[in-house]
Length: 246
Image (cartoon, rainbow, N blue to C red; front, side):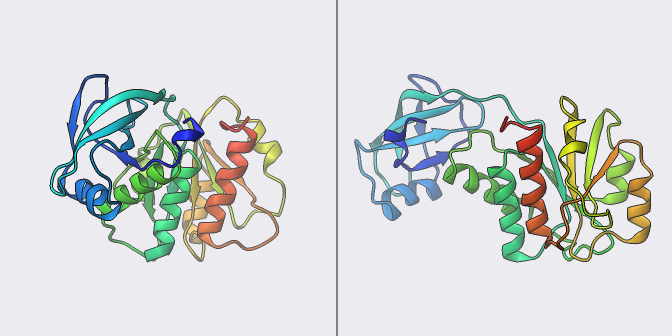
């Protein structure tokens, strides 16, 4: 996005975006623009829907119940969607929000909560996870909002895993080593990354994972990392070595 437009509010919307299409926001977003941000007729915002790039839009009404806008021009084209799959054992409250936000910022394509033996949280509010992902995309100029899949047990996940996709396992039991060389060997392949819960995978779970031909265990270094820190560290090294940072 041009830096001259970076200060404009960014909103994720569902409808298609194209020249000449009028758009009316729902009550929540209208209230946000008209009452919270105090935007009025003639002022501009940036809209995106995860399909049609980013668009500059101008307000044509400033009702707190239903703000209307006209699309002015496309300011960023839609990038190709990410194919990086990200699975993690859900954490509690704010740390769960953090994990979702960082996954969006790091460019994953699918976010998958995975329930393991030592998972701290077993029931998730899916709508909240989706809302957190959208909010992170709005704040960080991300145009591809990841798919947030419903939670699944580790056993069910492994039973349905596509064998043409490698699953990178952040293995807390592995000897300390740089993961770069091993990751480099996976360049060009379909990838997933799996982060375990606080306390790690159970012995049974780890043994099963390490016995699968598509699982690639990596070390994240000599220090014990919290689960949310491990997620960011793993995604960083993947994107830097074989991902879209190159």
